[in-house]
Length: 225
Image (cartoon, rainbow, N blue to C red; front, side):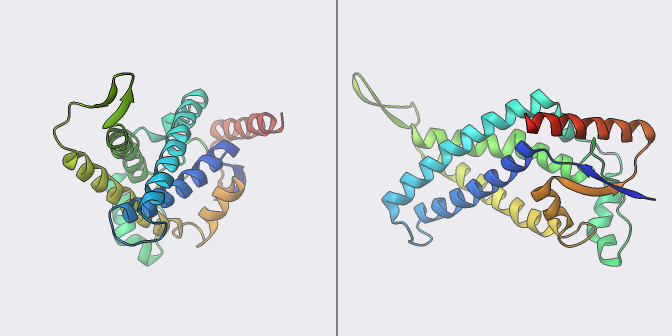
């Protein structure tokens, strides 16, 4: 099947991806220092920098949610079990035998079934849990006109455990994600696509091809305004 170059990732999508990765790495680094794993910034500064990065992460999430719903990109993450067994077999066995990828990536469907399930789980479970537990931890005690008040929580231990476990899940996802980046057409093709926005894909059906080209044109016009 012939291939063409398509605009797969828009400017904000790429910015969100790289900024999110940077913030997660920094939050993990400063967070594990707070837990006493090592000393780099010092405990006091680690807490301060971790809190600043947490606010930046929260702001980025708000903008990303707005962008996904405004552009309709949220539909990319709707889980599907179609072809999931073939996809799983590909990652476990096929990838090591140079088998063809069972799912064809397109502009209108960027994720394979396993990616959809994984990202959906991150967006509705892991990230909301890590953000909410972090906010509970930050605002357990808060100033009011009547002095320092505390939430009606008997202990922060459970919140801290949930927050830390969520952080480990997020770090585990990143490690797997970094490996899967190398499983494209070439070792660097997926990385290059997220840097430039463009990727070489199989030619689509006439209808889908037209839709992809229209999306590419409208995106270019929007970004050049």
